[in-house]
Amino acid sequence: MDSAFVVDSAFDAIFVCALLFVVMVAVFYVTRWFALRHAAPSGADGKIADAVNSTTFALLGLLIAFTFSGAYGRLDARRHLIVDESNAISTAYLRLDLLPEATQPPLRELFRAYTTSRGSLYGDLINAESTARELKSSAAMQMDIWRQVMAAGDCDGAECESARLLLIPSINEMIDIVTTRTVAINTHPPMPVFVALFALAIIGSALIGVRAGRKEQFGHFHIFLFAVVVSSILYLILDIEYPRFGLVRLDHVNETIVNLLQMMQ
Image 1 (cartoon, rainbow, N blue to C red):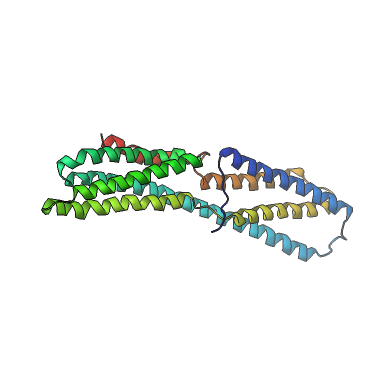
Image 2: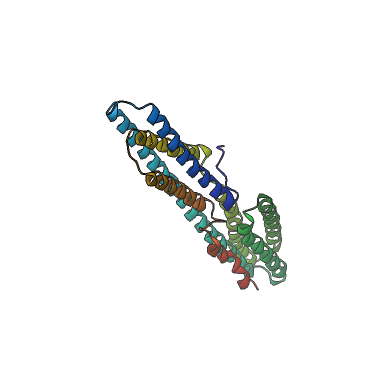
């Protein structure tokens, strides 16, 4: 299994992007200083240098676009999974009406506790221990719900048959989507993708530095602009990839699960 690039807090994302900015600027000035002292003849290997520069920046742009597109696709998938889980819980809860009336109250109470647990999961994602504890609690309640539903549906008659046919698939769907959502939450680009992005950004700064060292005049503004743009895009990618503590969040979508508690009162 590939090791993913994991960001645990907004500070981590800001630190990584700030570090990239500093390294890019530093590499530019180091390579410019080196080029000034080892100046190549004017026009030497110009076509080769232009080809290398073009290829490097094209690859950097392609990798940024690929990483951004993947991050946004995963964000959209997580959004849909939250809504799907909310619908699955709601459907299963409503179908409890099919069970014998005497068996419904304890199941409804268990559903309320389960919904509270699933609704609080999003807020707990910023802490690995809290996340593991919440997932373990949800899994235990799933088993309790399953056992109680099977016991309540263990009766004769057309009503019990209808309850089993309609309720059990709903419970299955409610349980299965937890696994799907957990995998989606923990799915991120493998570390080599971000290593390649960092490397290409730094190599790009080095190439700009070499080119600047062979010219009598150059503007400091452009290298700072290049570093700011690349590091800012990286922060945006991380913000989308980990929508829990930055500017991009899924709080409003998670409310669809939290609001189910009002229906269950």
